[in-house]
Length: 256
Image (tube, rainbow, N blue to C red; front, side, top):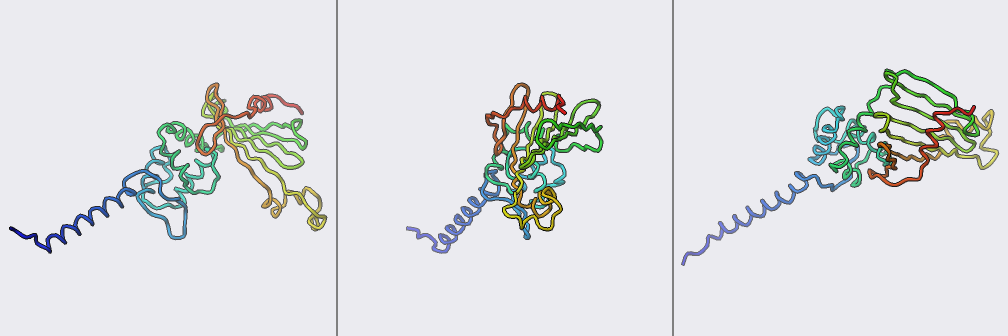
């Protein structure tokens, strides 16, 4: 009876153990599954998951990334912040599990490509038309309309109130498809008269750099596609009761 070579047996066990380590560590290397939050750090994060992310973003048209080098730096973060802005995420530049899922979801392919298109608009190349909308809020308002070949590409609407202001940003792909991003500001109100010391007026205090740091800002995003109007919350289209028709009426009719 031939006895097994003890050294050969040990070698075989080590060989298979090594192959198993390579296989299981390779799960994170070669798959597109999310397994860690990506963000800019002093020591740049690196990995094949970042390469996969960068390749996906480039395929959507975010060519400012230049190349998929595997390092999570400012260029990749900039593209991520753009997506967060339009997809209803906090703009912290971090890739969470939900954002990763939105980016790699093939059903979002056209949505993200359209986001890339409107985010690249250069308003300096557009004709600008400004109109007052003083009668629609307590402190007035206005909007800037940007046109290219007589077609609206972007509208910035600002309405001022006693407690804050609202900014509405329309990004048009065409007449029936556009994104709407709303920034709702709630001013920090003084709690004592001492806070107003050193300012010429109440409004100087409200709009001071120090006070604006305390101002609460809420973001919301929407998509108009044909006859459909939805909210966008963390990458998903959701039902909304926002009165888009009322907002469009405000844009089309002066109440000064």
